[in-house]
Length: 271
Image 1 (cartoon, rainbow, N blue to C red):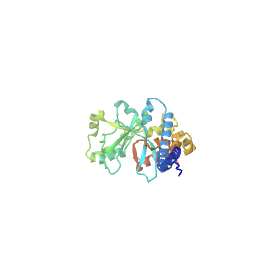
Image 2: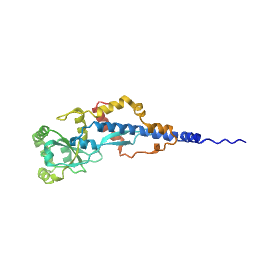
Image 3: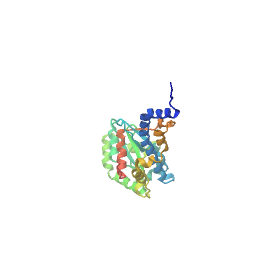
């Protein structure tokens, strides 16, 4: 009787065939993540250097969409910025927006008044809402733009002061002055992105999102794939073991993707 054993190379091929479904799933998961990573790198490279744009550049990160249908994968480039203390010296070039939390949280009526009359300036806003009720967002503007906002809030002061008075808030301005050192707001990084992308206000425009997205739309999957040796090894190399590793990343709910779709439309892109 002649006994024939499978060669080592045949065993490796068999192993690859057995792992094929899992490797395919891993590749389908890695493709959108790696493409988003590449786009993020290109965007960061095109953002001007210097202190004015440092916070914006550092705030960009990847997030994985959660709650999608089975077999769907989506990654987004988002901004994540911590609240910063608002200094009196910054007040001449900062506009403040009050944004109430989304349902099911219900802000107080006085916070809704602030949201309704936004934007405010540091000198005109009557009080700062609690973090549990609203998000304070700051936008950097020219002194002329801030002065224009201040004049408008002074013009409609009789209206918002009356609404607050009916809610029992009459000394908000005095209380605000005492708590000024603790006033904090989240910089509106999305506004900074649009301002730089299109050159709004006194900012000299520097396209950074649109070139990266054009390259993505132009080259597509195969444009990225030809330079991805790890993708090829995932499907061809039985010795390659890195295909099963998943990169950790913050998650974002499917409902939150609407904000990023709106931003993409502002840029004039639809895929």
